Image 1 (cartoon, rainbow, N blue to C red):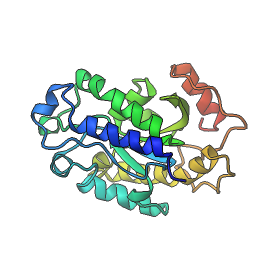
Image 2 (tube, helix red, strand yellow; image 1 turned 90 degrees about the vertical axis):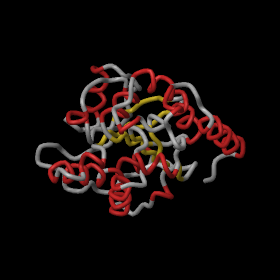
Image 3 (cartoon, rainbow, N blue to C red; image 1 turned 120 degrees about the horizontal axis):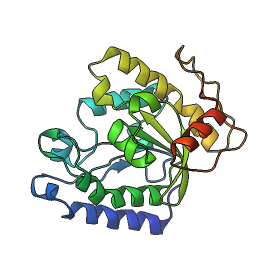
Image 4 (cartoon, rainbow, N blue to C red; image 1 turned 45 degrees about the horizontal axis):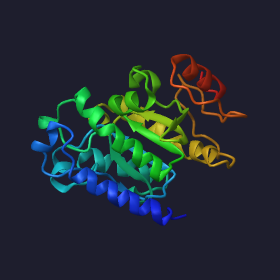
Length: 238
């Protein structure tokens, strides 16, 4: 279903605002702001850390080697990048691809929250530490939380947050790539559950982690560590 006309117009206005943004010093060094792209009505949204060199040059997210890997991972579950929405925490490239600074994240956060509010995804897949920590409100590292969906409310939208490793980190680490593929393979079942449909059988999970199972009733959204544990237990992840 296409988004409402008002939401489409609002996304266009937001894109123009991002492209002209001067809220932090990154606007002085960027080539192009990277708003994000994909299906504005998609039930699945990916959020990475920040644009890299190629993204900065083209004004598009995930167009380098990590983007190619992400497209391969999507193809493995029958999706294309045109069927999802891809964005980043930061909309401008940090010089030399350094880590985002707190003031830069604070400046860009309203844009990401507004994107989620307008797109209304059912699952937001966070790629790596920075995106996961920002959207979850939890500083637990990605190594501990990857592959564990948690119910959240962001921008007034009830959704599942699903952290996975960043494709760039997995490019040169075979073990991490194998884990990333396993976590991606679980997305169709999570999407089916989030959409209210019976999920298809989950692929064989890693020996160290039981298969994801939908809860009888989703727990209330809460960003505290105890709520994360409780929600994960009800989803059969412990």
